[in-house]
Amino acid sequence: MAHHTLSDNFASFFNRLNPSPTFEQQAAREHKTITALLENPDGRAAELSPRCFLQGSYKQQTAIYTINDVDIVALCQLWNPGSGTGRSWSREEIMDTLAAPLRQDRRYKDKVDYHSGSMCIKLDLGIKVEILPVVYQTGNHDPQQEPFRLYRPEKGQWQDGYARYHQARLSWKNRQEKTEGNFIPAIKVFKHLRSQLALATVSFHIECLLFSLPDYLFLGSPADYIPALLGYIALTPASDWYGKRLKTPCGERDIFGASEWTWETWEQFHKAVSVWAKCAHSANQAVDRDTAIEFWQLFLGADFFPKQVSP
Image (cartoon, rainbow, N blue to C red; front, side, top):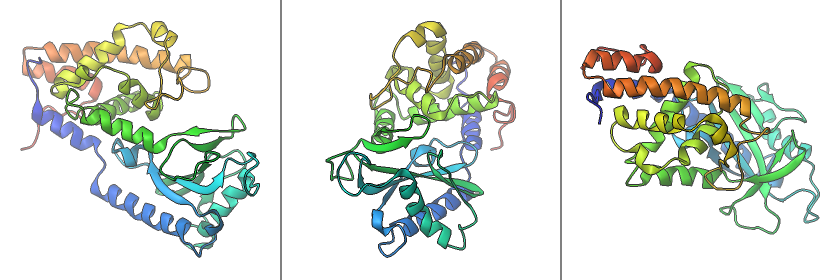
């Protein structure tokens, strides 16, 4: 147990991490408007009958600082193109059809961006909106059933996706008795640390890594679970970690590999974790309160973890 839990300091820290209500309101507004355009039964995309739902940090409540993007999945009423079932739609036709109602709307027509190598249709509205076209797995008629199929331009093929199942698994782990609701906050801490050093590690990989860790590591206050998580990761050498399989929460694939979490990016991240772990351990064990705060500031940042907290 930490000598100083520093509850007020950590409350201030998380308050600074969390997006302001202004960003949340803008994200909700843009999501509602764009979804209405895409799902309009009389609109330009009606031929695909898209059903829209959210994925990503905004949906999963793991966004930090600001809500930088809103990720909308548009599930089109098609089976996997090329499967020999139904009308043969090309990926370009799907993208063009979904983009049509946006290009027709004066608010969005000049802000639509995509090309043949794009995975998503992008809109830069201050908050970035990304619309991911996906289709049903061949033979599936249930929009709630996953996997759906999404197109990977870099591979030139359709692959399985599990956006809602992924979100459900993260929520499930956060609800577990042994994680005490600390799983989602821990993701935010790790994303913050990543951002402090401008590391290339993507948020999805952080989620997968933390999901794989034992529940008991999330017990206690931030002054306890942060050093526990960092120490657990640092204890195993980077090469040994990479020699194992690190599966997604849905278990469909291993994310250690050249097409996802590359060795170079993982090694850089692991080196940073080893440094953070030492600072966190020193902060946890410091008997003097001011010394504990100084160690937390070393890697969380003095701007985010002030010494004095306003009442």
